[in-house]
Image (spheres, helix red, strand yellow):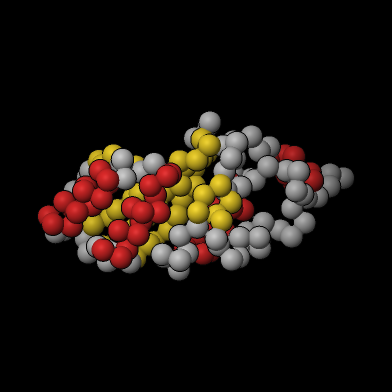
Amino acid sequence: MSEVLVQQLQKYAEEAKGKVTTPRKGEMFIEVDQTHFRTFTTHLVNDLHVLLMSTITGLDLGQTLGIIYNFEFENLKIQVKTTLPKNQPTTQSIVDIVPGAILYEMEIHDMFGIMFTGNPWINLKLLLPDNWPSDLPPPLLKISKPAEIRKRLQLEAEHK
């Protein structure tokens, strides 16, 4: 892992009002405020040439929703986390910066209800069935009730 890369990541994180931790050798965890996230990601991809995004993870953190973007570069795993208010789960898509994010954003939208503005496919379902009731919360939110989902989607087995 290049010490220059680590220094540049720390510099961009500071500019984005972010917090950097290194939980283990070869890993960086960077928390970035939502308002600076796209700028940070642009630096990451365009300036540092970190091009491999392995996945995006959604989290229900109680009052907020979290998104963790997992990047890899050489022998370094870079996890970039940002949070959104649960009552307004909207953020800018990064598909114009990282084209491979398109399906991951659709997955997070289906499972957590986060709207990624600018993702051209965001209104298509990726994981949820077409008959998903619009008044049911997304299935991975803590307020979701699996029994209610099974009942509403008619997935309950009939008992004889």
